[in-house]
Image 1 (cartoon, rainbow, N blue to C red):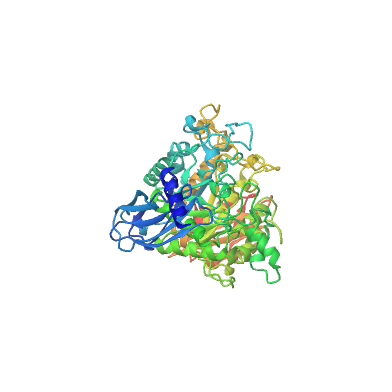
Image 2 (cartoon, one colour; image 1 turned 120 degrees about the vertical axis):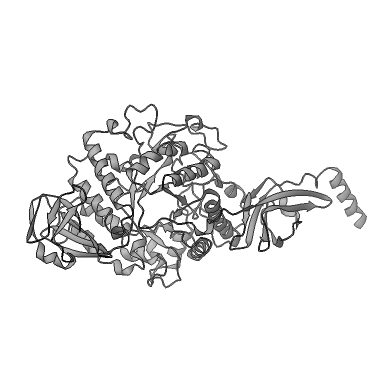
Length: 612
């Protein structure tokens, strides 16, 4: 029997079964020396690579472990880089007598990388969809993909329209002049799947979708943004991937996905996270159910997947020079893993910021997810910033109705009155609309009184303001069952467009009025610590008028909003506690001096922003 086995091995060798060791791909493809966490995971792809033995032939680099996956086509290598220096790491794979040597690059970190500054309440973030903002390179519109066969069709709101990274780069001057200090594009990574122009069905976590550009183009875009004083925020998703990802077709481990063999839709019951009465089945379906058939749910409880995702985010920060991360569907993945992710990123980059999408229409739900929240009895999320959906919902109603004792601006007053639930009100992302909601303007307005009031509020309240692309030219629309209707193309972003709204000449008079108003406020807000760091004191709306003050180191801003469709006369003595002895203020929009004594006459829907 022994002789037979030896003969079979010899036959196998002669047939080449042990030859040509297959190492098709390493992820990440390179790393850096000097990271605070010295452990590196390398995921190896290759036909039957799981049978290989691994050696490291580089001084200063220790092989911690080699983990064989359930699938024979993966291998997980864990290295200790605590004594490593920049250069090549020699990885030797062997099967029987066959060996294959692979050089793995360990780069030197950029000077000051760990001390990079992230987005804060001093910034204003411009959210855009790369596919819909501008097409700077038509040659990448209809590239042949492995799985996706769809072509650019601008007449279909649910199809790809051809926007790309080059289009963003070509309009950086427009954004900088407008007053934007940070850009949040929706995901730019590969989505090799039909119907995924939005980018949320990732099929390769380490490569930009070629229809948007390349990794090098993404890095260049960020470098050029920095030259203009604009930060870059990357949209990431750990909850799910695209159905065409190689993982879904050939999972490394049997538990890499949740409900892979029994499709189960998430119930989206976000309250089960903190609901003491919630059933276990509801909790499981919430966290483990798939977001959509095209987006299978990843199981972050698998430690190798968790390490992969954490490393992936750090790789993009270090490689591309990111200034921040926005994380999609934040409450859906495993909370313990997400907490560890935030902790590791903040350890590596202490001044970094991550904002999580926690879509709750109540303040408790939003506050629960912020770092160090006293409401979270399940452990610290370590998530610095949360999206204030609670304020968004209230503001959407507030500015589109008249103010009475329980409507209009009273809604905003009452929501802000719950700020004590948050651990850090300066780290709230505040917004009136985004790519998943109705446009704030469902139709083009007759005048801009409500528009100006809403955006004056957004840019003077606490937190980090985010505006949605096209608001400056009054882009409007309702979802009406198709998200594409609130994700329309920016006019002028395509060479064939008949109008170019990036220029004053291409905008209608009302659009220029909106653009000029926002530009004035955005540039005034830059480096204005009264707004970014100041305290907030507000007064209960009286006779439909809402008043609040921001104050910092002896400087003040007073905001007065008439939330009714009729003129109002305001008695100013009621507000004198925030005047700091001043008797007048200067309107930051018109430059006019406004008295703060006795009474103040306000036109219907008038808004004043006064400095003193």
